[in-house]
Image (cartoon, rainbow, N blue to C red):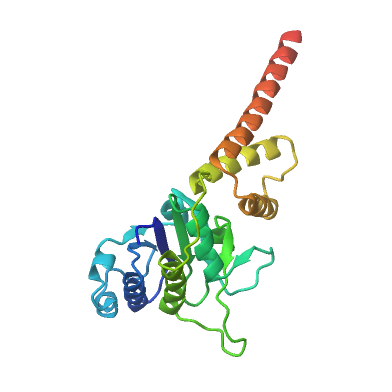
Length: 248
């Protein structure tokens, strides 16, 4: 499959899990593995569990934080089984694969998996458009990391090579994660200046604003329009302040 899809593992503690994920990816034809601050990598256990997917490990990109790994992505899904205080939209693997193939096929997409024991932090989910929800038995819902990656990769491959694949029609260029981060910084500065946002405690409000825009999935033109609106406010405010100073 020639798709721009990154499988991203955040702070993985066991190197064997990294190897098992590499094997699952290669089974299904994916190759872009990104490791965010892994505890032990490279490691012999990773090579052993990869079982022939050594090339996936050798080409894996290691970064210091999640934003560094997803800055060029336009659609980001976070795998999480934990309930959250702020409701995130959720997708099942099949519908997630469908959305990637129909709307984001020409853009980089990231599927993000958190640490084995704790899962993704809210700060990581701030960058995600939705949560990947893998339906399991309520009596025993635990999946190991490689299992979760394999399920998603299988659904993607199944639909990509299906007898009636989804028709790809989208010409929309969605805003990248980095473009959205630039917009959030721009917006937050205006909210602080206008005293709508407390700069000492901005997280809760900004997290809800992020959820609002992530659900909307704005394209590049729409973000440019919003940035232009904010810039026009800056220009008018600066011009007004200049007039007031001249009056004195």
